[in-house]
Image (cartoon, rainbow, N blue to C red; front, side):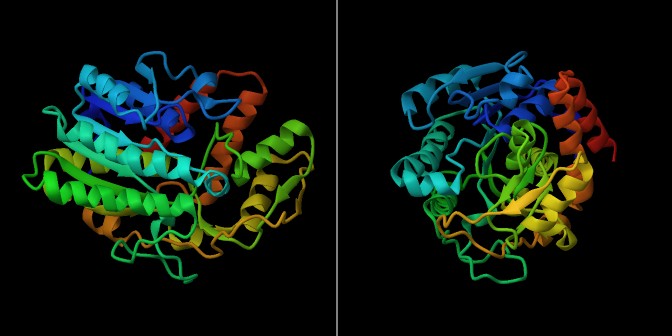
Length: 350
């Protein structure tokens, strides 16, 4: 159902391209021959995958704030994109408690701004808003949430993403009912992979512990999350963007996550990372009494599977192996682009 060659010479506009997922997405699209424009703030972490892999080379990288409509309009007008993938966000739950206003401005008004650009564009055919698995009203169910479950994220980050979904639904109904622009949202689970240095992410915490020669700190070892390698949702995003470009009937709301057996608790994920890494790496439990976080979180991906004949390609063990491989490449001073290109090819050939 998916052909990466579809994107050759297509004009693709990506918000949030300097982040972890955005950097990998730009890499994939550049390899496919797409004409890529990115719009985002400066890289959000130091170190940064965007800088390490020199992602801006071979694309048009625009540094700007998604809250600044005039700046966004200018970049959008120059790019004249056919496909838009919206990743820009304030993505950290804990930071959303510290600065909820900024979180809502970025995640809600940022969505309004990109939709305004699309509404006034004559070039866009396909738009995908990437949200999160945390948009649902979490009832601590042990089964997966479906796309028709109520949207009501608990914390400011999750709730702002629920609002972003509702904004997208409203624009879709109000301004795009003629189907000239196909619009979908994608609710992805927790991603891991080489080059994630964000705070409050468990694999990034593992990498920092390795760099600092310290034990890994695990706050909530029993929390269950739908972990997946970053390439899983990114290729699903591209599949949705491609298929709805060709046929608006594919435009919808999609969960993207691993199969049930890869919904691990954090303890088991860290144990797996430690085993794959070796070198007597250890972890300790240390809950710092932080804000509320959901305990159970799973997704039901039946819609994506039935509509596109989709299924995850890499299980969690493979995802951790590939994360460890990239990290060792980087720490050993080797060319991470070689590693990324090989992993992308292997994923496509799987």
